[in-house]
Image (tube, rainbow, N blue to C red; front, side, top):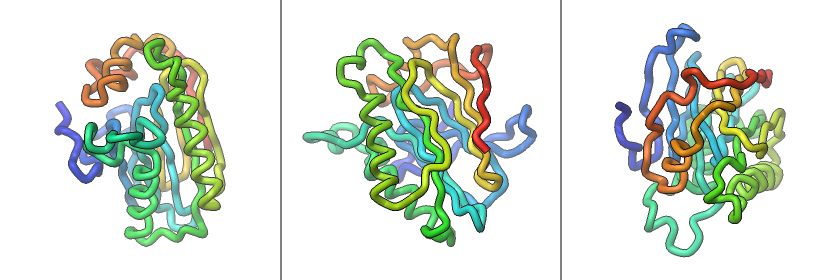
Length: 207
């Protein structure tokens, strides 16, 4: 079992992916990760959004995974980790990249998630709000969006290869949404199953 999300939001769950034959880092809700290594960053998204940003010259890159566009009234105190919310998650990611030596003028982004996958959240349009937020934030920051796969009705498993700038997205058409609903609706649950095992859906590549 993965360790609980770190207070600083930095993902620390590293493992060897046997299929990809390389080190992988798994991001949970509220986490981010930046690297200059040749590894893969992995996360599973429902209504949440992940931004993958890299310096196209140096290959330094990173990913975040946020749950809501903003904390709202009292939200940060209630849920703790500021990385769960859009503005803070984007700032953590960008600042982490800059600390590793990335240059903001060389940034490009690829963004994923924001699916309307849960009936219990459909009235609040969380997925659509997350998708709108990330595009507006990147536009305001002058960061080019090179690829996007947002909204729709399916959860996604996202693999980001920051050194190469490549992203692989698998839509989890057979995933039980109750599992994802527990994680996203309660904001403290882990996925109770491997979302990628046995899940259907086409794999899309964003080079």
